[in-house]
Image (cartoon, rainbow, N blue to C red; front, side, top):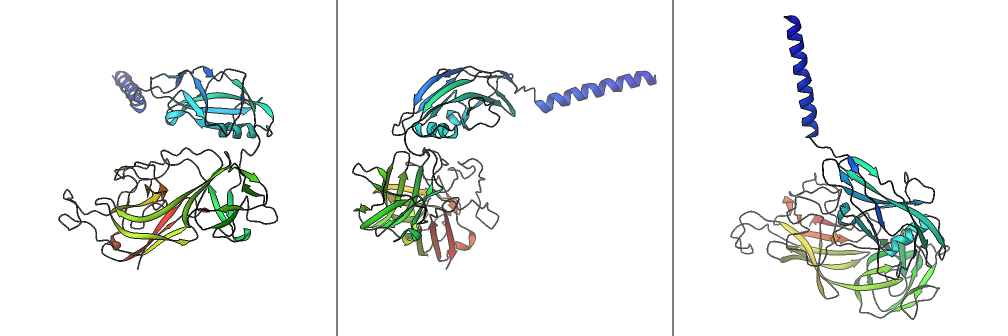
Length: 408
C-alpha cells in the first residue's frame, strides 16, 4: 500500500512540475528557428560616400523566423575586416523601430562607419556587415557576412562635443565668451538629425561672427561662410544681416551649412482652452523668462473653462512662432500622459510633488502638427491661483533643455 501511495504521489509531482513549466513559458518558444539571408547591398559592393546627398543607402535581408512565430526584431552590425561582431564598430536597429527587414542609413552615418574602420578622408577601405535577429531575450546573428567597400569624402565624420560662435553679432564678443552649440541626437518622434548637427538658442544682432570648434583661443580652428554659404576653414568674419532677435541657430557640419530661425511670441499655454498665462521674453544666456505668470486651475463652469470640462484641469505646454510659423515646446509625454514617446523615460501623469522623475521638466521642440494634448506637463498644487515665474533654459551643456517654475 505504501508503495502504491509513493508511486501515486511521485506521478502527481511530475505532472505538477510539467504543468508549472508550461505555465511559466506560456507555451511560447521565442528561440530563432531560422535566420534570414543578406540581400542588399550585394556582397563586395562599392559605395562612394557623398555627405552632400540626401539619398540613404538601403540595407535589406530576408526575414528570420521565431519558433513560436512571434515578433522578430533586427539590428544591423558593422565591423572591421577580420572582426567577429562581438564588439562592432557600429550598429543600428532596422527601420520601423527594429521590426522592418531593411535599414536606411544616411550618407553621414556611412561616413561615421568608414572613419570608425580607420578609413581616412578621401581614402578607400572595407567593412563587413551582418544582421542580428532577436525574439524576446533570444539573440542570434545571421550566418552570412557581406563585405562593403567605402570611399570617404573630405571633411569630418565625427565632431567635437560643442561648436561656438562669437563676434559683435553674438552674445559673446570674444572667443573666451563664445556662444556654445550642442550636438543634436534623435530623441523625439520626427527627429532625423545626421551626425554633426549642432544647435544653439541665442540672441543675434547686426554685426559679424566667427565659427570655432572650441572657446580656447590657443587651440581653436576658426571658420566662416564662403561665397556659396558653406562653412569653410579660415579666420575671417561672416556678416549677420537678419533682424535683431532670438534665434534657433543650427550648424550642420555634415553639409557645411548654418541656418537661422527667429523665435518669437513664446507663451505658456493652458491646453484645455488654449489661453496663455505667461508671455516669455529672451533674457540672455539661452534663457526665456516671464515673471508675471498667473493661473487659476480650471473647474467646471468657471469663466475660462470649456463647456465639456468635468474635472479640475491644469495641463500646459509652450507655444511660439518659429520664423513666423506656429510651433510648440513640450514634454516627452504622449497625448494621454500615460507613456513617454522617448524610450527609457517614465510617464508621470499626476501633479508634481517632489516624487516626479528628474526628467519631468525636460523641454523639447515638438514636431509640426502635434495634437492639442501632446507634450503636456501639470502644475503643482501650490501654483493654483498664485503668481509665478517661469523660465525655459536652452542650456547647451545640459543633457536636455528644461524649464523651471517658481512661486513669486
